[in-house]
Structure formats: C-alpha cells, structure tokens
Image (cartoon, one colour):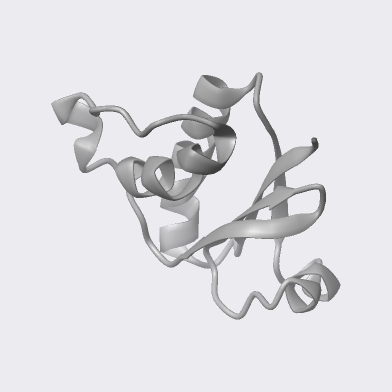
Length: 103
C-alpha cells in the first residue's frame, strides 16, 4: 500500500510556513511508513481542485491515492499525530511537554 502525506501550502500564508517544520518533523518520525509531497496551491491549482482543497494549509493522508484523513488550518503536532497515526497502524502516543503545543 502506498501512503502519501500531501501538504498543501501557500508561500504567503504564515500558518502554512509555520506548519512546514511540523510536516518535516512528522516525516522524520514516520519516514518508513509514508512519503511526503509538498504542493504550493498557487502553482498547482489543478491538484488543489482535484482534492477539494480550498484553504492553506491543508494536509491530506492518501492511501493508494484515496484520501483517508484531512486536517485544515493551523494545527499542532499532536493534532497531526491524532489525525494520521491511526491510519498508519499506530496508536497516538504521549507527546513530550515541549512539543505538545508546537506549531
């Protein structure tokens, strides 16, 4: 099964720029389970339309190119873990206090 985390962002959106490091951290800690694609919505409006993305940031989890989970807007690392880890066969774990509110 192919699993891809797709991060739709905009270079002009502060929330999306801040979430970029969270996406990178999530990839580093789950690199054996998924791949990440970063999509600038203005450059690839066709992909944003295809997946019904109307706001940046939006993060989709695709399995075999079908959407299984989505989060929109400014989120924290625990939000990402809670939304996506169950689809990766993982139970969300306790987060170190210094990362709990990370954005």
